[in-house]
Image 1 (cartoon, rainbow, N blue to C red):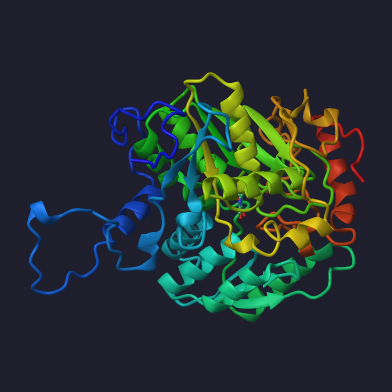
Image 2 (spheres, rainbow, N blue to C red; image 1 turned 180 degrees about the horizontal axis):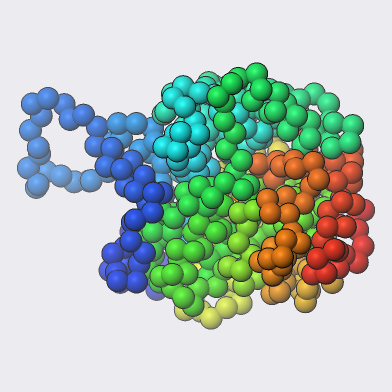
Length: 471
Ligand SMILES: Cc1ncc(COP(=O)(O)O)c(C=O)c1O
């Protein structure tokens, strides 16, 4: 059962878990099978000659033992986030992906690597190379340990010291680009280094999580877990970076609960849902490109959240609930809290918390760092600003829009108007963590240099009309 600190807040879940109901998708997908075989791998070698304890002496079942660290991925807990973070009787359930060894991206790193090995794209012992500044790096380090691959992570000076230290501790090879590319900024500099490393290591492989369908499929088990843990779900709140977990979880949950409302959460200054690229402090969610894995048709509405609002929510969660995380956790919690407060009392709202707070000790949870960036003492408004269309305004604070469009109109324009890779950047660069550069603040001109091309691409589709820039 999920833990529930505030029993007043919502009726307890009394139904039987729905994992194997007729409406639930079967476990035929490779991601589901992989998760099941990882779970099956959990009971480690039982000590020879050990007698099983009489049932009467078993006081706690505990977690099943794992014979591989991959067996620790998944089956994360859900926690009721109630008062005082949310109003009494109006809370939501948080799926705590920070309980994975590295974070939510452990799921996708393992699955992408396992599928690449099955296909023969990644040979035994071959090197994995990726540009990342965060959670995926930890997941790839885990996959490298589990499957015996060296891992090279290309990053920039914006990587938090805690993250760099962890990656090094887990055996990843860190490559720091020291200067932005004169035209394409930090993202291009990182991409160039990835290319150099791929060329230097014949047989090495880059996962490309923005466009790799295995990234999306990796999250199907997360949806099955939610159904088993909570049963009925009315509203799902998910952050969007590559689009992987929103699409993977959203598809399965909507098949089980056709009425499900799916709410995407993006960062102000991110292009994903049709805003112009601007400098961004927030990492994890958001992007300055158009990831191919974002499934626009799934979303009923999108919210953009600004950095001070996410900081307020992440810090409040830490104090009120002892369960918090980074930029994406703060942003989804803010939105889920509002949806729970303003929707019907009986609705069941679930938010996915992608990671925990550790990585953000020297940023979001550091008073000095926050003060220098004017992020403190700026609580969010009670309600989001509302716009009718993503092109109606350039948003700089928490904003809601119930019109969700694919800025490249990929599904609406099968005649080839859109870049088939879903990458609007003519340089094809992609920051797998959706971050905007060193210190997360895009650095001088990263977003600026890329922006005109993206604006032109969007405008050419006729779908999104930018009315200005936020500079
Ligand atoms: C901490 C964090 N939150 C949210 C996201 C967004 O998840 P997705 O890439 O599945 O859209 C990411 C992606 O890198 C992340 O690292």
